[in-house]
Amino acid sequence: MKIILFFSIILIASSCSQRTLLLSPKRISMTEQSLLENYQISEIGPVEDQLCISSNNELGQLGLIDELVKNAQQKSGADFIGDAKIYQEANDCINIAGIGYKKSLIKSK
Image (cartoon, rainbow, N blue to C red):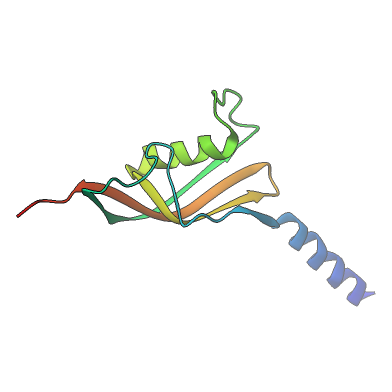
């Protein structure tokens, strides 16, 4: 009986914490199409954000992932998010975690 109870608890706990990887781009941005020739990027630190469907009724004109990336960029000040991982959580939320990068003009000598 204890074994059945133990496995039941493990099953319930694992089903509540499930997440599904939706997207894993090397670099993503909702504000920049590409990095222009005279620009470089520098790391500004980790970027994380979450968007929940139930708490955000007014999503705007973009899709969920686009809104998530746009919000993460606005909050962090990043022009690009590198090595991003975008997950669907079991609680109707999606989240992003990655490294923020800021673009800057390469100074000529």
